[in-house]
Length: 331
Image (cartoon, rainbow, N blue to C red; front, side, top):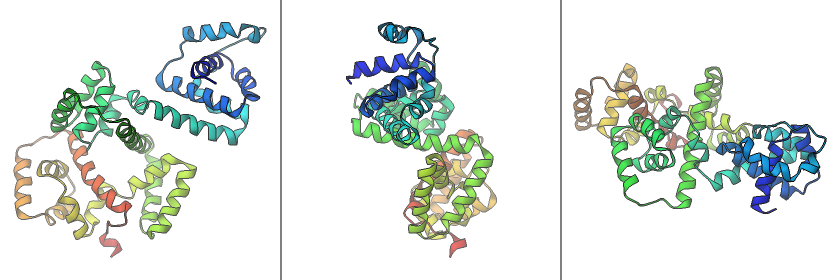
């Protein structure tokens, strides 16, 4: 089915009740169902598919629809529609392919529809180049609301990147968008359900103590059942409170990557055990620089502190993923 036809068919199906839409799809070839599913997923994610847009394709199929009382089923019912049309097993496979195709077509589609506060959290610890990429995808009003929530250094780099005229390649855009979405989904999962977060933390601590092969096999099993839970478990293997129990050599390797300003921010109102642990694992010169930075920021913003701590956590999680992060409790 050509792209235009698939979109018209998707708009038509969105104007029908779920039963009628499923009936029309039931005997269609799988390739056609997949093409239509991609268009429906894209329309839903982009916020298109208004009543006016659905009028023309509905008119074209008026004869087919005669005698049926049409009411919008809504693109958010795509999973249920596919299941009724082709069965649950094929529906899951087609839906995954559709979602992948939508992200390939427009990697930043889901990011553009996110809340500004979620975007700010998602960009914590990211470079100005990445921030510029996200800001360029937003409307001027949205970018204006997001900009003040970013670190001052990131804001400056982002503005330079937006005005340089140097655009990222499609491959880089796709990779960056995927990484940001992964981070945003993990953050949403943890923030939305504290009880679920506690359960995932218990699982994460259990897996952290296993050998790498066993751990990775179990994580893969979790991913296959619930991808968001798998991402949450990976992040919860290492949280800020764990800094106090990281082995000295591992921590020293991490802290070398953090500049004095971010270190000072990360230590703002930190637990005494964490502050002592970090102070004991940086050089006297580095400690003096941190103390100087601390004197210049008596009351930093909470989001800046969180962003600085996330930078430390990012380095810790990267080491943990490769099995190189050691903890005193495991020695």
